[in-house]
Image (cartoon, rainbow, N blue to C red; front, side, top):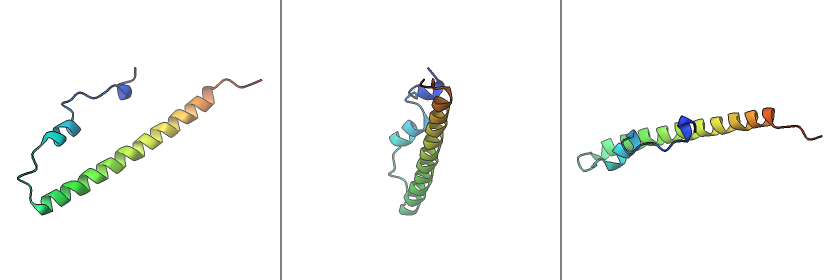
Length: 67
């Protein structure tokens, strides 16, 4: 199994962020945090699409040709 296929441990960054109390954040800080997280989500989605395209290309290259 590739490292990318393994579930991340509960102590990863996203899990820590999800468990963090937001009570001490101001409205401005919460807005900035949302922008940062949305940017990170977009980056992860783009990487996921790139990895999927790479996988499809590899599968097509190594797929046995039909007679």
